[in-house]
Length: 123
Image 1 (cartoon, rainbow, N blue to C red):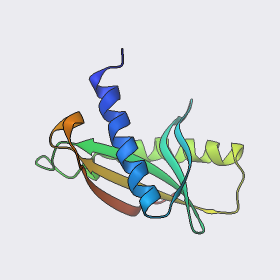
Image 2 (image 1 turned 60 degrees about the vertical axis):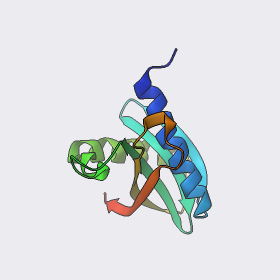
Image 3 (image 1 turned 135 degrees about the vertical axis):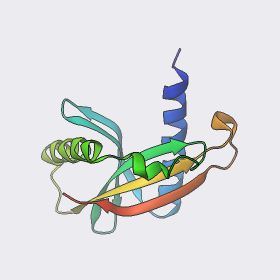
Image 4 (image 1 turned 45 degrees about the vertical axis):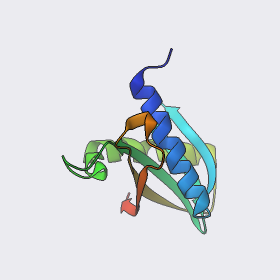
């Protein structure tokens, strides 16, 4: 049986995917894992291949969810993105976004609040 943390992570990623699709993004990959790191969502938007880090929180009382994407986490995402790009060659420009998902009632939240931070950090 999956842990609560895994269920909440999947809940947040599902909400982020729904939001991105609604905004016209095409989801290319989810939960890509390599020895260098992991990517929550890989999507295409216009001329970009977008590597999306999803952060779920109940609220922003202790800081915005995106603030928890530390420089160390950014480096791991960038390394994983480089590996993904080696395996999936493209002419698209890479971009790194963060999607904050706020779910006050956890898994029982009917309509989580989504904040999308485009181009949140760079290579």
